[in-house]
Length: 324
Image (cartoon, rainbow, N blue to C red; front, side, top):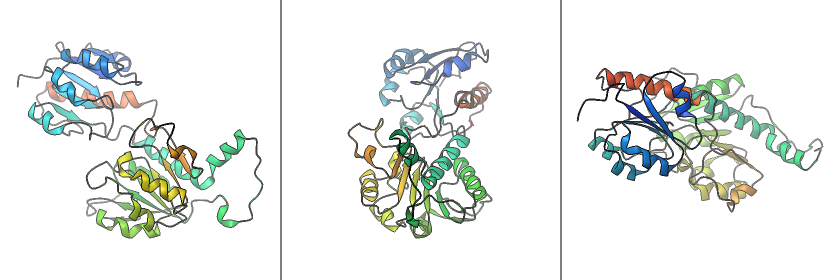
């Protein structure tokens, strides 16, 4: 393939429904030509003139039929299962993801959800809307609780999982992590086990938190069997992909009180349908895929983009967070 376009020749297309990618990029004064698409239709219209595409949820495989100039895709998110990796390789189109840009936000969001479940903040808000002042509770098992002495099982000890492990320990929790390669681990978790040992750890966990990518190994990791292995008093928190959880199994576990509750930031199909039975569950907290939201998000992604562009201009084939 021809050389990567020089700075004065390059055209970047930013594609996202909400993020102000092009505006933030323009503030850096790079003098690189760029534009923003706010819809899939607009993306397809502008794509034929783009050398670089910065995108995540808007991606469609059909875009490749309209992308003769495309040389590099920078994913706005950490996930990349939506991209056709083999097709990109065949076209010599580089792909990098945005792993790490929202590690602080997602880990803090997960910690907030754990606190909300234990402190029953969601029921407090529900009562507030109904102007109910709940009295003190005699039934010990129904009271709010603190985190000290409880065990959190964190699946995925990347940047997000490790930050969450540190936060959990600050609240006095015991941290057990699940990681593919445990031999070189030196992070804050108290114990680390390989994925094959995950089912054996469920019976001791008070909270199970999914921070893992969606892969063949993690797809529907939480299912009827794994929910049955959890304590009835335990909680599930998912700040990973919705595909990591079998949703009918989750619905059954929550409906029948097989587990105490859950907090879910990502569903298989979004937005969640108004008719979904999940909305009506009192023991479920739903956040609308906002775990990674932060006011610094655009700048963090552009930092990776700009570093990778510098490498491509220098004919360096190794990109930050390179997938293809």
